[in-house]
Amino acid sequence: MDIKELFTGTKKLVGLDIGSNSLKLAEIINTSHGYVLNRFRQIPVTPGIIVDGVLEDAAALSASIKELFRNSGCKGKGIVTSLSGSSVIVKKVTLAQMEEADLRELIRDEAGKYLPFDNMDDVNFDFQILGDNEFNPNQMDVIIVAAKKADVNSYLDAITAAGLTVLIMDVDSFALETMYEANYDFEDNEIVVIVNVGGGLTNINVIKGGMSIFTRDFTIAGNAITEGLQDRYGVSLEEAERMKLEGVPGGEQENLDLRNAILECAEPICAEIERSVDYFRSTFGGDYIKRVYLSGGSSRIAGLTGHLSQRLNIETEVINPLLKIGYNKKNIDAGKIESIKTVGAVAIGLGLRKIGDK
Image (tube, rainbow, N blue to C red):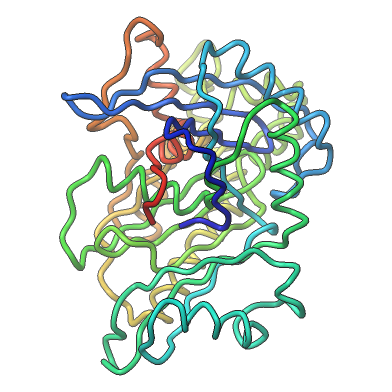
């Protein structure tokens, strides 16, 4: 799903995941043996450059993007990137059956009914028809995606200043959908939930039959766990981050205590995930959810999948964005694959995009 597509004649696309804590690059090539992750690179982002999905320092982001590409060895200049958080609105609506051209005109003319914008001239938007409404065949379900042009252009300008060209502007949640479709088999009516716990944002995407039907972002994420451990143990930010992912050197009891402390710090995130799932069930008819998948840097916290599975009463596991995708052993260290699986879901989803697909 594209908010904005710019065509420059090149077909080689590189996924660029711009997060509040890090930048991630994923270059995927399509071979006779299937998709292969050709390059993957990650570098940290200085705190404050991006806040709740809004770009606050374009020059600093541009410099970081230049560094990322310089260090990656990637030659591709065509970029697929994405928005999330408060910079993008995703809304599901039910409308009368009509052609796509008429639907686009309707959304533009009557945007105030569906979107919190007064003037659509200031907004980039796109939509995807999900299909017939199950209760009324004369109507159809549609997902509308919109973002202020100023927010979109701030990212476009920063990436352009780094010598690159944005060919597709996606949404984090839909990038997760693309990654899921490429790696997992599913039935037409099968429902799963993908929860991406990033640094500053958590993305939730409910997928039915391989298509997004509900998304939500909230600003409680992995950083909150790290900060909670800092306060609790009186350690540096770096040490708290290490403790969150690696535990405490030494005894089993210390690690058990830490695990319990981490889950306490993660409680606000778990509560929001539960609220989102409950809202989806109440709004969309309470359909059976087969599985919850976790991704993002905090997804591998010890005990988190079990805790959520018990809390939601839904089987929960960490997603594998390389389940059916190989990797180039010349460019990627095999020892880093597990880390890439944890943090690379959005970037890999972006890297899988092609010009013209939805």
